[in-house]
Amino acid sequence: MVDPKIMHGKPVIKGTRVPVEVILGSLISGMSYEEIEREYNVKKEDIIAAIEYAARFVIGEEVRPLKIEA
Image (cartoon, rainbow, N blue to C red):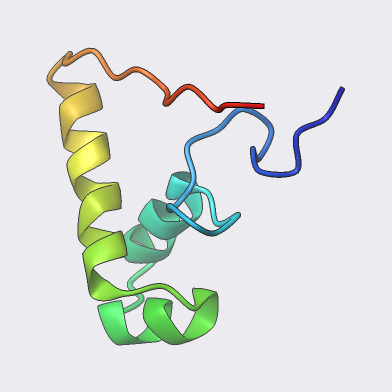
């Protein structure tokens, strides 16, 4: 069964189907926060949350997915 709220099991920006990896890749490619906000319809806080997620992952903090009630 496919859950339309989950993007292939990858972390996404809350309330969107925009994967965190897309936001990070956009930053790496040189896009500004403003460009990313316009391109993906996200907020600056969402971009910062994606960066924080990546930082926690790199330092080894355990990240657990939210339980989705059916």
